Image 1 (spheres, helix red, strand yellow):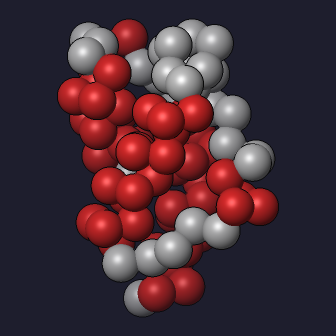
Image 2: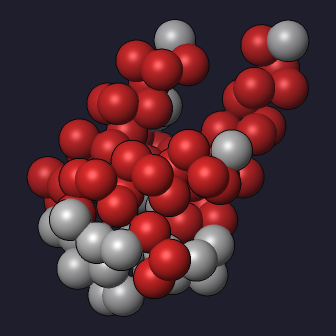
Length: 78
């Protein structure tokens, strides 16, 4: 799951994927703004056929936050 989120972020933010770690703060370390985060989540929602509520979105600070949320959702889908 991390690899997928990392690839999306690298492509979207035009960053070297190697610089994106689970501990990376999406805004501070990767330079993403709120539009970038929304685009990331829209891509993830399309990929997995889920809807990420605004309450969850507000809690995403690090890449691992997104990965953990998706892993939890994937477990409830399967």
